[in-house]
Length: 166
Image (tube, rainbow, N blue to C red):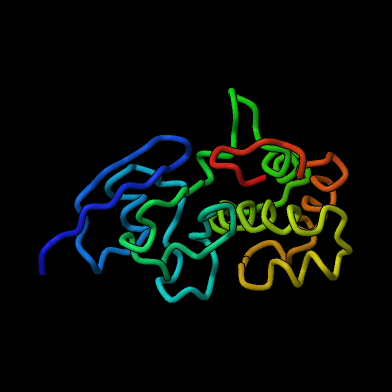
């Protein structure tokens, strides 16, 4: 089947690797780069647990091939924190108990950052709509919505993020 050389920046670090054409981005991030914060929830793009930012927009990394990110910039959940400080959305999820088991949390946070970039002051309904592709089996979403509202109040849109997504 052969391999293809890709060059990609992940969380501000440049990588150049040979990958099989069928390798999913989520597997490349986890297995080759050790970015295990990006979790595999379903492998069918239904749950959103594997959400990352690709050139500043959220994507489900289980539905993107690694070869498709050649020349791109990827930000994972590990790339949100800067200088030891949590990103405002991460901080808001922590302070507002926006998680229970935590499995969906990386994807929820990544999608929330993208949502707030487009809509810095969303209503509860707009938050629920913006997160509809990310599933949570534990929380009932109340504290997730509360967390996103708190992040919006904290001004998370103006916070810098590795890879230019904010």
